[in-house]
Length: 108
Image (cartoon, rainbow, N blue to C red; front, side, top):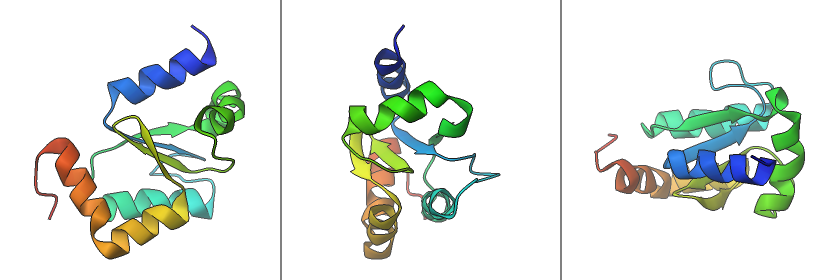
């Protein structure tokens, strides 16, 4: 399976995916930490992929998503954006709504 197929498999296997540097428990960059925290704050259940542990995904994802930086948040296979967008969506209440729409529960 090539790297693009692996990325597609992760996206199809999880409704909310955060490609980040490090893990939610041990983020390795401030932007990744802030994006993961925003998802936690709204009660989102998400799958995190540590791009530092997989150099192939780290190299391929910016081309796959047409987004140059990490973290990258995908919901239902669609790129949502990076840290600033995730934080803006949280502040507006949209992130909570999006997470609720995906899993059908009320994260509040």
